[in-house]
Length: 327
Image 1 (spheres, rainbow, N blue to C red):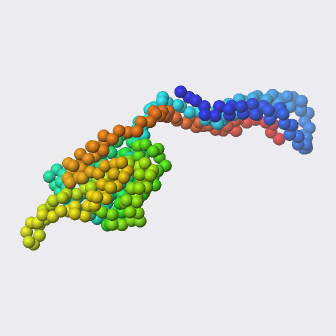
Image 2 (image 1 turned 180 degrees about the vertical axis):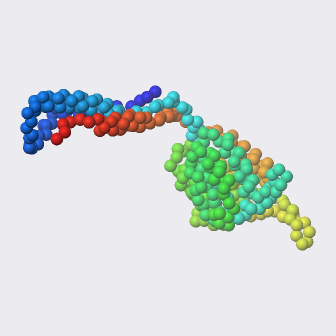
Image 3 (image 1 turned 60 degrees about the vertical axis):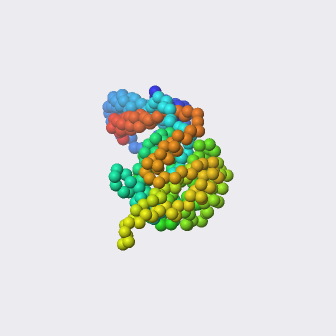
């Protein structure tokens, strides 16, 4: 339906009449007169034609004024109410992009891939299932920075994660700074439904805040943290002395990640391959969202430009119609 945002603007409709009858008329200018023998007949003819031309000018001017006032009332088309799909959850993802994430100890479709590529594949599918959640993205290495603020636009978050590059934030790992940044971005939100999912393959080797201290901050504001340790525990490496079996996750600090999760009421997960990583995010996907009242949204489309355009056209026609006495 069509509604008026400012209907009180129509109170200005009688303004031209008030100006016409309440304000004093302008004084006429005196000048030289031309005397002709047939002046009475000439004055009668010109007076009649002037009144006719003045009447033709008055009609489009009045319509232009009405349309101008109608445009000022802001007419708009209001659509049917739409229900917004909200779950009330604020979900922040913190992904490690330090130098160690380039270790190719994961497999996908019979080929070796690095840890960050596996994370992109699994987290991308996870985002597709989070309809109705507000999702944000933090990338951290030696420094932590907000790549995407909380938003319902999950496709944009997925694209920004896909564009992340190893080493973009430095080679070291600042787990504490990543948690601190998440606390800063989430502490103003509702207490229920705030979750941080932190994925890393190492230990805290950089940053200004220790992970334990950051976890205390998170627990104080009610932020639940789920930590994920990523990386295989066994990998064969060829060398000059033959094939050796090494542990590519020997630097993973599982004790700290477990302590962070326990302090905030979350849980620590261990992902040794792509299948385990996908299973972890499926478990996280089962978290019950905090319920919120349904919110309705009515789409609106402005229509003021139609009466405004008509007023401009009529005003132009008024200027083209001759009127008034010629000197």
